[in-house]
Amino acid sequence: MTRPFVMYPHKALRTPAAEVTEITDDIRALWDEMIIAMDTMPGVGLAAPQLGVGLALAVVDASDKRGQAVRMANPSILHASIEPRIHDEGSPNLPHVRAEISRPRAVTVRYLNEDGVWDRKDFVGLWATSVQHQIDHLAGKMFIDHLSRTKREMLVKKSAKLRAS
Image (tube, rainbow, N blue to C red):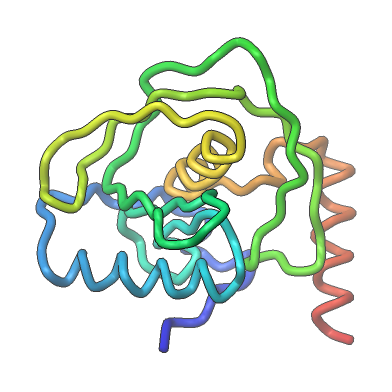
C-alpha cells in the first residue's frame, strides 16, 4: 500500500523539495513505495512531492519491461541537448488532462544513488522527458507551468470539473 497522490493545488506540489543529506533505510523504503505507486498508475516516473513528501527524491522507469527504475536523490541536470522532443504529458496530481510539452531530447543528470554515492547518467527520449518532469516536481513546478496562462487555467478547470463528476 502506498500513500495517495496529493491533488493540485496541494502545497507540496508548489514547494521546492528539501535536499536529501543521507541515503537511509527509510529513504530506500520510500523509493520502493514510489516505484509501486508509479507502476500502479501506470507511469514512467514519480517525485516524492507527488505523494506529499517534501524530499528531493525521484524514480524513473521508461523501460518496456518494468523493473528498471533509477532511484535518484537531489537530481540536477548537468547538460541538456539542443534538440527538442515533444511528448504528451500528464500527472496523477492533476487527473484527466494532458498537454504536449517540448523538452530537450537528451539530458545528463547528476544524482545521489541508492548506495549514497554521487552518480551521473545520460537519459534519452522518454527517459529524458520523465527525468525532467520529475526534476520540475522537485522544484515545485508542474508540466502545466510550461504552458500559456490561458491553456494552464483551462486544463486546471477541466481537471477539477472531471474530478467532481
